[in-house]
Image (tube, rainbow, N blue to C red; front, top):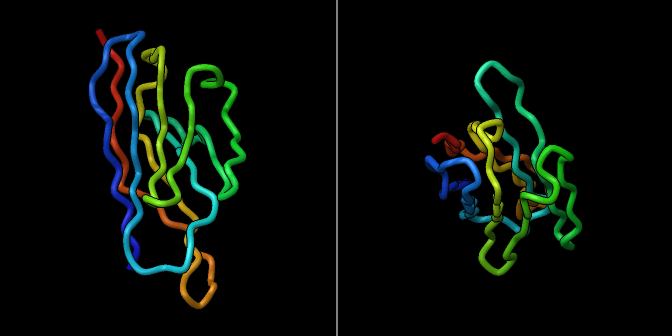
Length: 120
């Protein structure tokens, strides 16, 4: 059983910063690509950023230059550093992780989500 635990969300004023974390735990062979998605009220879930196991990143144009995705493979943890936040960034943020099981089967896991609210 694989578990994803997100943390770091909260309330922050416009222009502020937050750092999200997503830690994977359980029994598996390895972790592949990891990513962050977000869903604002009344909107569809959208890609924020992804990072491959080798460290290649893909950042949505709406957050490029403000958000940075990174990972610590030794800790099985994904991060999202968010700077210069605006009210438009308010959403529930979800991590998505590709888990390679011990039988080499690929599974996609979603975290439970963490709320980010940008408001004065």
